[in-house]
Image (cartoon, rainbow, N blue to C red; front, side, top):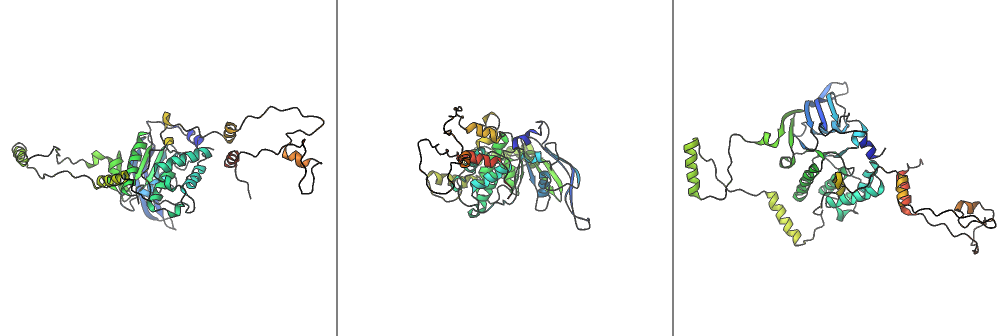
Amino acid sequence: MTQSSLRSSVSLDPARPIVVAQGLSKIFSDFWFRAKARAVDGIDFEIRPHEIFGLLGPNGSGKSTAIKLMLGLLRKSKGRLTVFDRDPGDVSVKARIGYLPEESYMYRFLNPQETLDYFGKLFGIPRQIRRRRADELLEMVGLEGAAHRAVGEFSKGMTRRLGLAQALMNDPEFLILDEPTSGLDPIGTRQVKDLLLDLRRRGKTILLSSHLLADVEDVCDRVAVLYGGKIRAEGTGDELLCDTQRTTIHTPRLRSATIAKIDELVRREEGVSIERVDSPRQKLEDLFLKIVEQARLEQTATSGAGHGGHTAAFLMGGAGSQEPDSTRSVVEELQAVAPPRPAPQPVPTDSRAPTASVVEELMSPTTPLTPGPTPRTTDQAPPPASLDRSLIDDLVDGRPEKQK
């Protein structure tokens, strides 16, 4: 079953949540089936279409367990959990999910091109589309210059970039990212955040689990904070972070005399005084990126990961995507590239047909059985034309491997 046929087997109502959890619990037991650890304890939450949902909490709070339950890697102990209105263990659900685990496990002796091609095969993506997607994704994450290096030579940050490309290879509708910016430099961190915002605008739904609270604050629409397997707080950034006890006023730089008059007015009208007056500071991230951008403009050489490009075209979705349908069968692919067959010619009765096949040549009694060169006559059929290598590759990609 191809990737698109798996997608079509599940319909998605835009008004319905992608993930629904009600009283979800996961209890790990010992050998005697006694409760050993309650990793997730009766949590309720929803992940809505086209939003970035943040999952926060310290180590051991239940974040990774909740993610594994959504992926169908663990079975729940109690409660209800659905993904795309199906049980998470349904194969048709897994075809619509992209997953970046906390640690990227890659084959060390494959290069990025081969790695993405391998994961594309797992989703049944045709060879030509796999190669096109791999090129676009490597350019997007800034690894086009290292496309033919062995993954075992990569730093952790470069491996995380490749892991993000792998998670997007099947063009998922629901993207689960566990610590996506772990090991990335500030440039890569900013690129990942910009990419997540761009994917949300293009209709993707994203679950982001991270210990970097600033990253979550920058991109997430809603956040749930876990502790001890329970959700302690949930809501939008404004609902959770707004300080209702203070007021902030931003103005251009003021003279000290003007500030004194404002303080006097506030004392008279509100009965309070100005607590602090300071000048705004830019973020260290912004300063770092400004320095790096200046170095790039000066064309300073570097052997690390590149800056990264635009979002891959096949992730655009809708009318913007120019990618052909990936559900075409191998036969349709061959018909699309194979040249038309010539019209059959009448076979002479007094001589062998000039288009005789290789099998007929071998079975002919006139074929010599002993090796050695034979003189070629004018009536001898020309050797068969060599097969197009791309047709052979398509046949191999579409045919199950023979049992050895």
